[in-house]
Every structure is written in C-alpha cells, then in structure tokens.
Image (cartoon, rainbow, N blue to C red):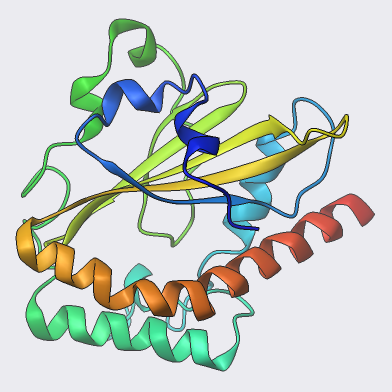
Amino acid sequence: MRLPLAAHADQPWRIHELTPDFTVEDVWALPTPGGPGELSRLLTAFGAAGPDGAKEAGEPGGGAEEGFPAGAPLIVRFLWETRWQLGRLFGWDDEGGGLGGRVQTLRDRFPDDLRAVPTGPEMGKLPFEPLYLLDDEWAAEMANRTVHGVLHLSWVPDGEGGYRGQMAVLVKPNGRRGAAYMAAIKPFRYLFVYPALLGLIGRKWRAGAAA
C-alpha cells in the first residue's frame, strides 16, 4: 500500500540528516507483518526479491545491470531490460557517472556516530551500496547520470499492535535530464514495478515464516 510522504518524513530517521537536498519520491507499507526487531529478516526478504541475473557476471553483456527481478512478470522483465538497453545507448550508467564520480557518496556526510555502525547487508545484484544499519532502519544509495537515489527500509509499528516493514525512495535528479527521466518512468513504476516488487517481497516473507 502506498503511504503519504509524511509516513517517512515525520519519523526520526537518521537518513534525514544526510538527505536535506533529496526529495521523498515514494513511501510504501510492505506486506511483512511481524513482531518487534525483525528488520534483519526484512532485509533478507527484500534481497531475495531482487534481481536474479539474466546472465552471469563475466559473460558478454552480463553482470548486475542485466539481472531481472527474480520471479517478476514478463512485463517487468521487459521494462527492466529496456531500461538497461537505453542506459547503454545514452550512457546513463557509464563509469564516472555514479558514486565517487559524478556524485560523492552520502557516507561523506556521516556524523561521527554513524561512521561507527555497520553498513548492513549487500543487496546482491540490486544496484545499491549499503550506507548504515541501525535497529529499525537501513539505508543504501545508488547513482548514475540521471539521478542519485536512496533506498530506505525501516521497521515500524502497524497501528494494530504489530509491526511491518516500510520502504521509502528518495531521489536527487541530475538537472533537467534527470527530472525528465524520473517523470517518464513514473507511470511504469506505479503500474508494474512496485506491484510486482511488493508481491515478491510478500511471498518471500511468507515463505520465510513457513520455513
């Protein structure tokens, strides 16, 4: 379920300190009902719902950017592949356009106490670099020539005595080109990508509970 932006902005997350120049693009309640202290399980389910890799790294045209969301519907796989084909055509993902090139990592903005905490798990073939892991929140970042983005996962009360996961996406578009790119992909995210991703996370969550 999509949530109002205030569901993220009104929480005392540490990510706010690092992203005053970012916009909160989306906030979603995740289909992961549970009890207190289950953020690590959420990260496992989220990573398992990420790309499974259409080709192995090292093969021609292979690598993380070629991965399809694992178990995703055909339309999502088509959109995923189209995005990376366009990226190659227009140079959106060229070396030098990402972290440490066009933009500096948000780790450069860390206060001293955040520098001492773990970064948390890698997300497999998802194009995000972990930033920090706390008891109730985890953040990761990615960047290319169109946008600098942050994925924020948190574990929050559900208002009914339990807890659930929450996902927020924050973005800093790269000028007019980046803003146009975000506007162009918005309908596809809402119609296809997010429903497929949330469905996969829910299935992985239930499978983990059954196991």
